[in-house]
Length: 236
Image (cartoon, rainbow, N blue to C red; front, side):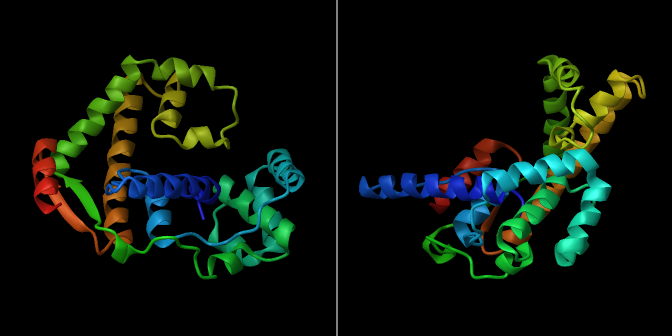
């Protein structure tokens, strides 16, 4: 469900690109780290009717007016199935479930259970998942966040400070921790350590997600990227 609007649009675009590569007599290679998009390519996505812009605006305005706990309660009244599945903090998912119910009169759960629309199938692809050595990965996560600090992350958070805590931007890695530092709740050192830890945990969850979602993919374990490249080239 998450990202269904964006992933469906991406899927339309990538199919055109893949078809164009095929017409040139070449083999398309799709590379990415955005798992939900790749999953849409492999498994397709549920067919959900387009949402009327007025309904979409009405839903978002209502959520902003009443806040997440009350909005979750409103969803529970019209779609108890999705409300039971979602947390009050799941802003985008709550909005999506609510607007689908208003638009169609049917629960989002109904559409998710329908056969997915697919253009390609997994047996038409060769799937590979890359699994870097854990210690190296965590070291890179730590270094990446320090690089973000050096390149203006604090200034970016200050510029976004007027957004409510329910806004999706605060779910981005490091945003909440840096906001706590800016408001004097924690030290900069503590904010960086907490954000680095959150990044490492996220990376670990990503690895687990890819294992579960792409069980037929051939796993490539490596320490240095050059090693992964050699393995990929030998397999391809």
